Image 1 (tube, rainbow, N blue to C red):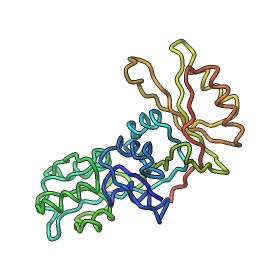
Image 2 (image 1 turned 180 degrees about the horizontal axis):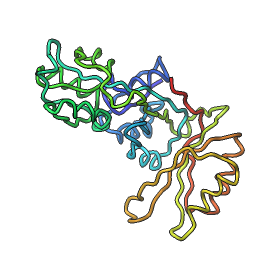
Image 3 (image 1 turned 90 degrees about the vertical axis):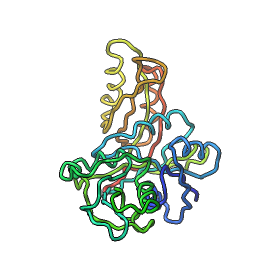
Image 4 (image 1 turned 60 degrees about the horizontal axis):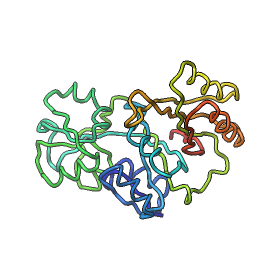
Length: 273
């Protein structure tokens, strides 16, 4: 199985992909748009994308891309995120003046930077990529923030472990495929969808009443602006699924109150481990 990820080998997306499919061949991509292009072009069988972090919130670009492409969520995965300050072999934490990492990872380590004001947070396109760059620079004054796997993959040395702000730091990942390649989950208990309501009083309440009327619990709701349409929004929702027919009924009823409804996937909710 070929799985595309955004980021370098050793990244958290790489780890999540191998957690889902240990035998998979991983295709690293520099940009998220390249990940979705690889799926569209059948260069890969699937992609693993981060969708939400318990500390930093949603990966909004990926919601936009899910809606823009003919893909669907096949399964959900949770990964415990442990961040580490990594340096070149032989470096000491006292030498570090800059620490590179993905902006989301830096946001999850704010307390570390408060406690070490001499170290500047430097944004980079990828966590594992920051370690790769570190080992190319061979500068003892530069560090990277990434996983243990990234340190081992590129030969970096962990100077300080578990520097994230909170130990309950998890990222939700979606394993996605084109709809023609999708292998439906036989016992789904969760659904992700997108919908757009008319710009009039009460329209959102009417849409949400669909879920309330079915006794369905919405576990997540977020709005995103519609590109090129100022002050118009798409709502993304996750809800718990009691039985498969509930999802079909929800789509049918939402269509009566929404100008657009699209199901993004039916899958089993992942458990934190």
